[in-house]
Amino acid sequence: MSIAVTGLRKAFGDKVVLDGIDLEVPSGTTFCLLGPNGAGKTTAVRILSTLIGFDGGQATVAGHDVAKEPDKVRAAIGVTGQFSAVDNLLTGEENLILMADLHHLTRADGRRKATELLARFDLTDAGAKLASTYSGGMRRRLDLAMTLVGNPSVIFLDEPTTGLDPRSRRMMWQTIRGLVADGVTIFLTTQYLEEADELADQIAVLDEGKIVAAGTAAELKRGIPGGHVRLRFHDTATLDAADRALVGTTRDDEALVLDVPGDVGVAAVRALLDRLDQAGVEVAEFSVHTPDLEDVFFALTSTKEAVR
Image (cartoon, rainbow, N blue to C red):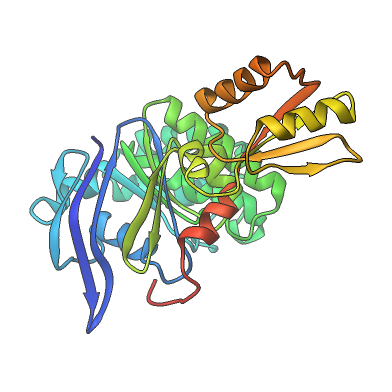
């Protein structure tokens, strides 16, 4: 596991922000931590990236104990926060060279790394320009490029696409997928549910300091009421026969449609169609409708906001 957390606790005064959370993130995957503002997402990132301490539990990152080996953890990770760390008074290339100096690369290696990363993030033409002239998307790409100077095996991305336009956001998604394909582990927090759906191998939902659900996007959606199979029939007689054969349906006579609520997994759908087949009912077409991550989010989280 790239990240393993057991019983992690953190309080600010009498306010408990993380209340004994458990997490496991396999290497070379994207893990997404979802939750409303104040749920504790940024606090978790700050703890795992050694920026603040914690009050209880255990945490390892890249095989190193966060509390006992913070220097080894820092050497293995990269962090891109909600706000860009780019220096506006430097060019893109100079920002990267500065990071190379901080990582104690030689001057030649630093320049070589800067050139490589500018090309990788489609910033070569902008490399000699001041970062203050960059668009939001360019700044975020440069910010992530700076994170990669140290060749981290784990990268924490805390709401990395906030404020970006849709095109820039999708370019960032491509970059994240490329990093994971190269074996990097991504720990992502985001306010964009579509982003989690697109990128995450595993998702955990954090609310009021506790993990209230975890799994793949598909697993989380299946766990929320609202899933149903929609059946369409050729005529009213067949619709009536199907309605008699099934329980709890909602029908639309004009569209010749039945909605059947419940489990929409493969086994359940197969059993449903078998039941209709045994009753001699022919289905013209069917479709499976599952709740989306927005349904999951609202079903599992509160509306209160606390310390982030």
